[in-house]
Image 1 (cartoon, rainbow, N blue to C red):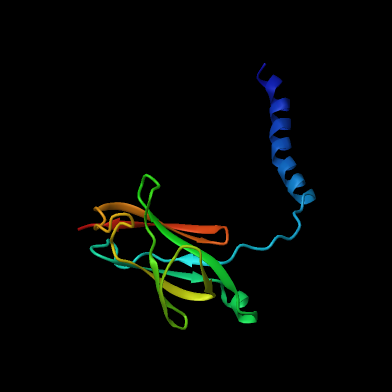
Image 2 (cartoon, helix red, strand yellow):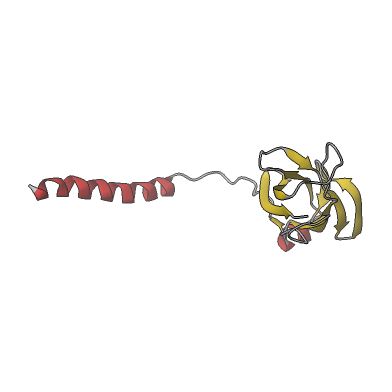
Amino acid sequence: MPYRWTAPLLALLLGAAIHPRAAWAQRREPDKPRPPLISLGQNIPNPVASDARIPFTLGDAATCANAPRTYRVSLRLYNLLSQVVAVPVVQAGPNGPAGNLPMENVTLACGSYVAYWDGRYLSTGALAAPGIYLYRLEVEGASRVMKLIVAR
């Protein structure tokens, strides 16, 4: 009686273990352009009392060394209800100050940047309430998300 299920169970386990490997070996995707290499740093200071700086990097040494490459970049702060709270500005770039461009579909070249948030809501201009916020960096379809804490 206990051996009645041994053979079907063994066949099922072997089939599940072998089949995905065979499927991946046969199925090859055509070469797609890779998403850009991006990194998003933790905000400074953390927790935020009044304003914050958010470091991020676009591209890598191999991608940026061959040809000057530009990226379409957005950075937004969200509350925990997924509502846009603020859009930081680009404060510093690889060639010195980048100007105070709002980070809403802005074109930036490869390099390291610092975004600045003044601690105020976009809609009202009032200081952001204490709590947990998320900031999301979007670069040509790829995105990174980090947590920001406001403590007053």
